[in-house]
Amino acid sequence: MFRDEENRIIDLLRQMQQADDPQACEIASLLIEETLVYRDWLLASGQPALTVGDTRAALTGLERLVNGEALPDGLTEAQRTLVARWYERITIEWADSYDSRDQE
Image (tube, rainbow, N blue to C red; front, side, top):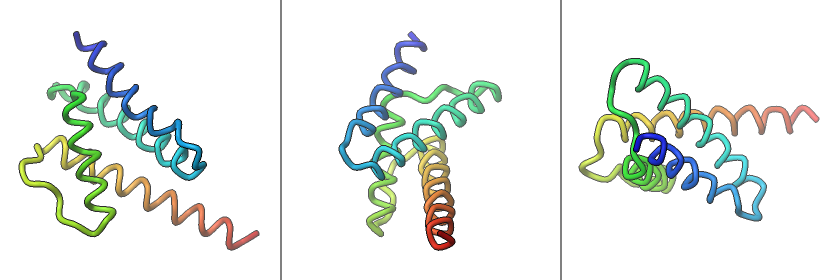
């Protein structure tokens, strides 16, 4: 059961990679990587695994955060943490990306 749920999470995030926009593909790759790191941390610390529902809720939260809106009510701690990790990772990567473009 766990492996099926894990595969569904990865499939959900990989759907984002299928966009024609290279920046969207880059962001999707970052989200996938960060989700797997967080999932592994949760499992190693004995906490419940992420579900597809958790990932979808976190994606909704990330979208709202990026749009300058408040996070949705009712997010679990794991969902809020995933949103925060994604947001931090994206903003750090973008800052690094823009810094390296400025130096070219």
